[in-house]
Amino acid sequence: MSKLSPLPVYDQSYSTTCLVGGLTIKIGSCSTKAKTSKGDSALTKKSDGHVGFADLPNQLYRRSVRNGFEFTLMVVGESGLGKSTLINSLFLSDVYTTSNYDDRIRQTLQIETSTMDLEENGVRLKLTLVDTPGFGDAIDNTNCWQPVIEFIQKRFDEYIQQESRVDREYHIVDTRVHCCLYFIPPTGHSLRPIDIEFMKQLHDKVNIVPIIAKADTMTETECKGFKKRILKELRESKIRIFEFQEVAGEDEDYAAQHKSSKESIPFAVIGSNTKIKLNGGKEVRVRKYPWGMVEVENNDHSDFIHLRNVLIRTHMFDLIYNTNNLHYENYRYRKSGGSSSQEGTNYKIRLAKEEEEVKHRLATMESRMAEVYDSQIKEKVKKYKDNEMDIKRRHEHLSKSNDQLRREYEEKKKKFEKEKNDFAHVAKKLEEAQLSAKAHSTTSLPRSPKPGHKNDKTDGKEKKKKKL
Image 1 (tube, rainbow, N blue to C red):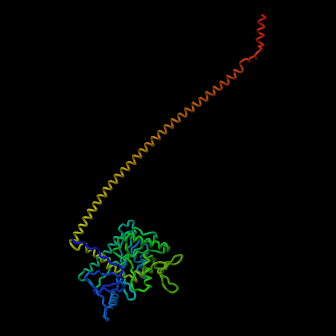
Image 2 (cartoon, rainbow, N blue to C red):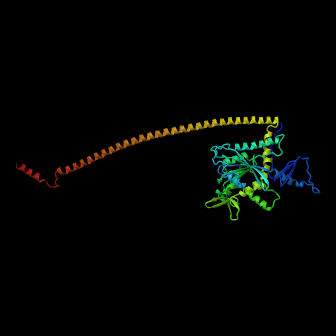
């Protein structure tokens, strides 16, 4: 069984090349080369005289001017970031007016298109603007990028149908989305998860050009730091944005201007519908503030000039070319490769079965791990509850023991105080008795005669007895 070949990878380092009558005409420098087989060999020879095929670029130019050009620009961002105002400033016309858009915030994403014909110096441009009101404005923004993806793929399918028709027209109307301007809110910190996920989902389907909206809300230092963090997060997330390649063979002024524009990515821009005339009579778009004015087309104030140069003046055809030869070809290859043969179909079915088996095994493992996790959690909770009850019981037992000891202590203390008072009372009585007895003994007892002398009273009695 044959294996599906990988998707073709195209280099973006090209300028402007077109296929006319089977010939590849290089207008600028181009490094995109088709791989030839080993047996093929190309010889380069110069003609001796003027043949005329050197005028093919002029023929292509006249045909292109006669047919005009088609460009589809998509703008994506939250409400209130100045998307409509910026578009008006880019094309120097009131593409969006207050009569063709609603100021109310949509809760669901809607895709709205508007087409207009612009002309400049005889060159006609059919501009199609794709707006996405309601993006990021809902409470739940899950898969809010899905309508955008479906819209881009629908335009690819329409182009495939026009190419596949037997009686197809000579000029196929190109309604594919050539560029997506993604507006980043000027938070000054980093990209939000919705910003990263949106660009991850669309970077292989459309040319993404990130834009920092309302750049006048940040200082110059904050803006530079914000740009560095955005580019770092884009590299870490492996998100490919459109790279504006330099066209070789241009003068030094163009190279310096292109280098400055490339270093300005992501472009920090401002837009305005207010026009004033300067002293020289030049009309410019400005934003008025109480402290002064901010000019839209001033490189010191914003990157608007760099954005307009690379988007319209120098690399608009590169965006169209990259859409046709990279994103569209990859989409057509993926769509046709899945059902090109029975082997491919069987391979797809086998992959789907293997994917289902892997999902089933993962679901089984996940359920078992969930059961083990729940049982461990229950055991831990039960253990913690038992410990808590044990600690509570011990606390209650200790509290009761403490209360019992306190009561016994109070009783013994009272008994001791009573005994102490009784003892003090008895001791006091004994002391009073001793004092009273001592005092009585000193008053009632006769005075003892001195030794060697007789009592006078006793001698008188004895004398009376003798006389009798």
